[in-house]
Amino acid sequence: MKLSEIISLDLMQKIQDLFAEATGLAAVTVDFQGVPILEYSSFSQFCTKLREDNFYNYFCRQSDAHSGLEAVRSGSLFIHKCHAGLIDFSVPIIVDGEYVANFMCGQVIADDGERLENRLLEHSDNLFTDRPELRDLYDKIPVMPVCRVRATANLLQTIVDFIVRQFLLERRNTVLLEGQSLQTELKRKCEELEIRLLHSQIPAHFLFNALNTAGRQAHLEGAQKTEDVIYTLADMFRHYMQSPEPMIPIERELQNVRNYLFIQKARFGDQISFDIDVTPEVSACVTPAMSLQVLVENSMLHGLEKKNDLGYVKVRGSRQENRIRIEVEDNGVGTEKDRISLMNDMDRLEKSLPKFHGSGIYNLYKRMKYFWGDDFQLRFLENPGGGMLVRVEMPARLSLEPAAPRW
Image 1 (cartoon, rainbow, N blue to C red):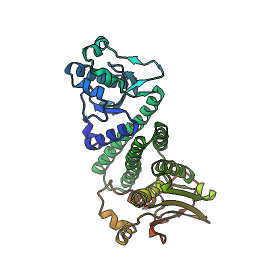
Image 2 (image 1 turned 60 degrees about the vertical axis):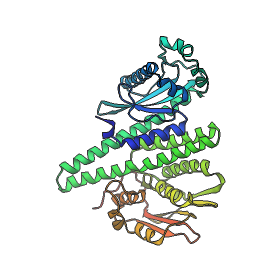
Image 3 (image 1 turned 90 degrees about the vertical axis):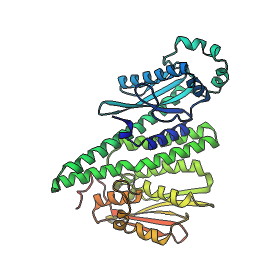
Image 4 (image 1 turned 45 degrees about the vertical axis):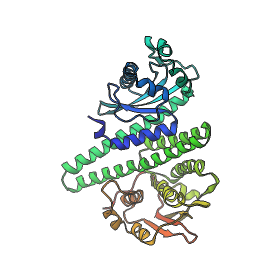
């Protein structure tokens, strides 16, 4: 199996580039022989220069191949020192037991003395004697605690797990759609698979946008704030991967929203303010996972990022008897009336989107319809104060078990 069968190489290159930019580490994806599949991302001048020499390039590839095979053998990510004494870590991409590629990062120097496997070879003792111009480049390599490298490696493992998981879901969906009849029970299974696929797609674009935010933050200020942003993102993504249930308490959903707003606050500072006012009786009810996240992110990306002056996002929630209402309001640039009309007509919006690759709003509508049937409302309105107001009304339920879908 080739990597291109699992994910678009262009998309994989983008993931690799953004990850390297956000973490300050070099990154490359190689095959089992250590041969690069994608272009290098944020490689140090030292390693770039070293790999231009055929002699040392051979040992670089051998080191990359070794780390990938060790990761496969151990069944988890693998951190070690390469033949030049730099820390690298490998996260293998494995599908159905087949080793497809090795996503690896590193090219830093450890400062805490943690013992790692050392792949230093005899030729390394003469490295700076043979190539004295490499000494100055080596001295520019960043120093990083192994504990931080390990935390970053765990984030990369989460990303790789998501990529593989999404591929397996899409493949399973394709097999079902092509191989099963239109009988009622089989149709139900296909619908269940579709909702899981839609659920799995939600964080992908958010992850890339947030990592890009972290990368820009790293450029503008010191490592501590950047580290906070990346760790917050890791917590969000890990929470999603470890909590696959499609229905969650609104309070848990709001915690995801707070984490997202923390990242945006690190990016925009006092230019943007946020307010969450949701009553406890609403917080205890359940909602489709990532539902409020989609609405808040929509306000940020399409409303506030294009705004030149001060902006805000407000999330309000209230309950009346057996119904709850949640509103997400912003004072962003808004959108034209024709676009609002389209978003309020999902049947018409569906026809403009390729199957399984719709917008986040359409994705949310499909999942809400799966759980609530026609017993919900998703409306997009112009905010009288400028910007947009999105209103969601749905049943007030405390159970985590989804209601039987209504066909």
